[in-house]
Image 1 (cartoon, helix red, strand yellow):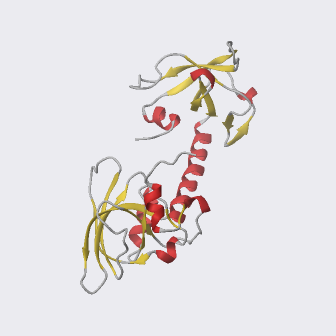
Image 2: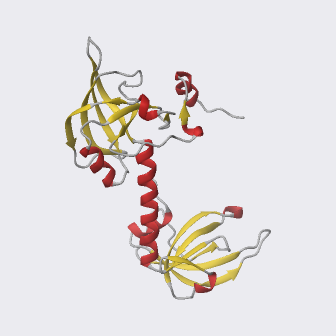
Image 3: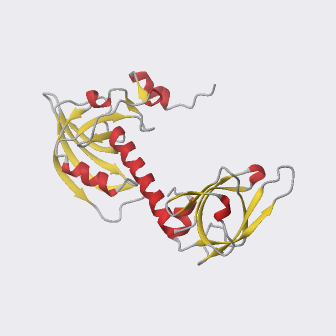
Length: 252
């Protein structure tokens, strides 16, 4: 499970109490935010007082908007997101001074996620394929986990989702809607307690055309009733050779 710091610590009932700020030393002196953990110990987390880098690039949120560093006061319980700073220090990217600001920020991130997946289509992997002698065939697949529940609801409402083959990196074709094949869903099953990475949603479809990428273990992407958007150039697969090239690390 990959998640940012604020999601990780809040999921474990943890916040941070601000003790104050102090000027750091060393070859790259930076202003430090002094905090101590509030809440239960977290396995794999920071369980003692800590110093986090803070500067004018840190986004400080209060009352659902950005505020200045002067709003940071000792005694406040806050949530933070962290990144690496100089010399293995931890630096703050965002500080939320109240729950309302954090919820507003989460909704912004959620809407970005919805926009991204609706334009790139919902990913899944192929479980089984049956090719018909006269063309077309049947395919069973499982949708990836970790997506917003609304996306699964929307794809369920689409009884004829268009399906495009994709690479394991999730890249797909430039004109992914035009190259996608319309399908007819024949089965939808939601399994409880799926393994990590799986949504637990399995579906079967019939297709009038079987693309080369429709093979067991391969990745596909499903389009619901979403507005079509042309993908950015750096996400394109332009030729079958791109599948092979994308599977290897290429150094400059």
